[in-house]
Image 1: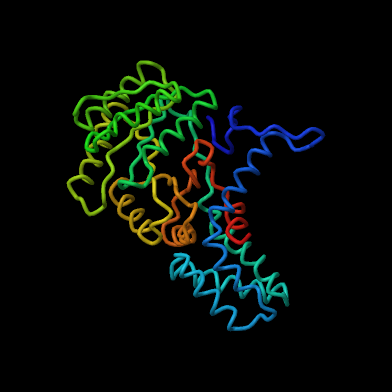
Image 2: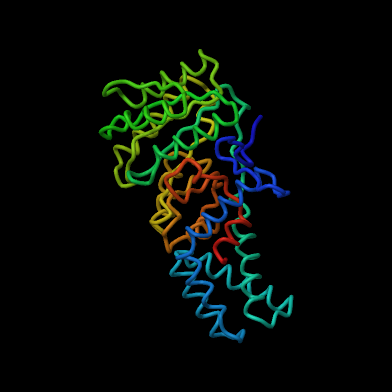
Length: 326
């Protein structure tokens, strides 16, 4: 069984500078962390400015509460973090605001830790991964990037173009299939469930490691489309009784609390096993992961900060907390 703790793409590796002791994989990860810090700057700056004073008092905590809420951390997570932070300050006898900021990073790390879980592939052959999300969240693009992660690890992937509602969705996925040199199963105007069934059956027959099913983008309020998701899941189970083995939701980090509402709705419909959070670059709402951790702690397998193939990486609670407060 294979777990995604890190990507090992030779194309994406950054060569160490002459005389440097930093291994290429570490340099690659550092480059990713720099992009993550840059992406979370709008969220982090509003929080870190709270700690520029010289006193630890109730005014500091009130300012921090406002900053966390503005970052879409949510009421429950904000209350939890403030209580946890005050406890840590008391226990460590911190006297400087910068110390409080470091303690907040620890509190955020602990809150986010349940979300840190690797995507495992290999227990089932093929491993069937169903991917959902609203229009514009970056679902198909994320599938393309995830395909590259899988292919870079030597896993064979088959794509199912089950997004038959959106114009050009099949063509967009085909571009990613070509770019990653993987096969794709599609039908012209076909039924999404039928395409999914054919793809899973083909994946079994061809001995593929992974079948990725791209479903139609939809809003949680579109009940007929949400019912279509249930149908896809049922039909996939007819092709492979244990499938789908993963049900992922792609959410746009820019949407803040609306992203949490999407997680609730799609989880109620499908029973989500993991999340991919995209577009964290440029948003002031990066605190939404704290809200998810407090209210709906579904694992975050990957987070994205840009459009490039290298801009989707595995989620690490400590890295995220430090990037948020850097």
